[in-house]
Length: 220
Image 1 (cartoon, rainbow, N blue to C red):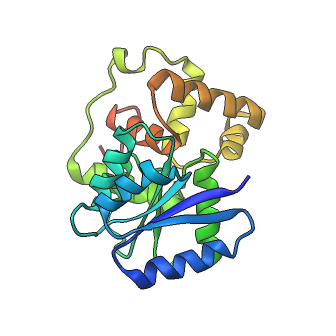
Image 2: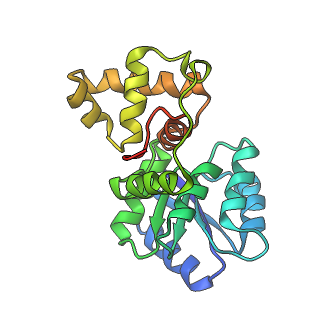
Image 3: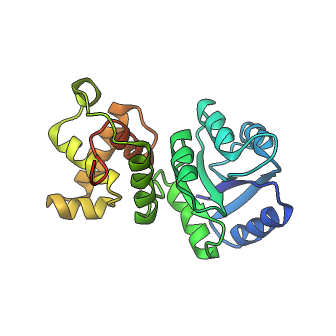
């Protein structure tokens, strides 16, 4: 299946460069370009892409606000945030807005294409480096509140354990190895966690785990 991509960036050279790189992939097609955040929101409705490559800093409407509006629209699309700024605040805000991944613009062509595939498949691009920055941001904002029984009441003990490991940036295979279970069993747990908590993907699950207090930054 071909992954349909919309590229949202206010710099024409960036849009064209990404278009050339991604169209060179046999399973990826760039179906449109947006010049700012407002244009990106409109183009999602018009073109129905599978993935949006969303720049953070754009005129009219920022990439973070555009991501939030796209997610609120209910469109079945994933957002992969692109930026030249490797800053904690952008990681945190982009993930909270509903982004499924975060990638720096200096990523290689192969990394970019693989990121699009990962996000399109319904997985989250939550590399260990991103997880560390996410943890640092929560630490900077102060220790999170303690988890409430109501917040986690719908999860089984094993699902709660899997959620905590997702928040640490572990893949399904790594979680399976840690818990000594089959990888398919982990996938089943992850799916149930997302349904029960009303979350889109494992990135949102990681954010939830920290904000609920289930996982706490070291030293807090």
